[in-house]
Length: 275
Image (cartoon, rainbow, N blue to C red):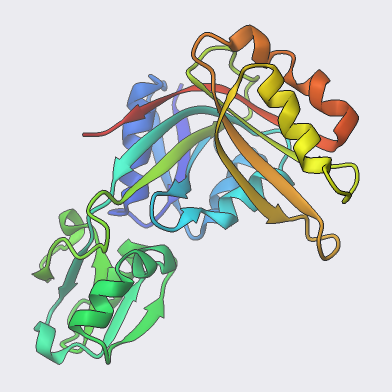
């Protein structure tokens, strides 16, 4: 039986590359890859049982957390992380024209942000136009001499590579996660959670974080997102390095409960890196 895997399409995106790598690492049965238009759609496909797994970017080393993914995970509380993959991101500028004729640059907002300094230095007068994905941008500039796209050089499909790499930071990379509705995994070198506090009062967050410290768990990431209920109320997303502390992690929900209104445990998982 095949396993349908949703990802941010169309074909040729970095997300497709990550989806294929994660499916192989997780040894999914006969994976069928389903490109979706928009990150929210990727998560909704999984939440609505239109696929068995989904791959989404959750964090970039330059731009930080991918807010659409974080908000979708908080909204859909029955999704779990089964594996993570850190993928190096090297962007190309491609077009049917030449760099001297470019007046518009199209790409996903994250890709544009990751190349913003280069664009400002090399083609400062070009207008930046956001698209749903890098692959969509590549499709939209084909045949145009004044439009260029930012995306993977592997997906250029006949366009001229005008410059590569153009990302501002040499070590630019994105962490992708494989999501599933299956039960939480209990093995891995990392764990992820999200929680909201019972009160917006002095020391409330510190008390929650002290619970983590008292369990001797190293918090490798913390990020806040608005709860969308009222101004000043936030949801906190955290990643934990487990190492040999998996038994301590099993206690974390109980320890956090006195200080938190809601707690979502996305589970334990292994994280890999692509060289």
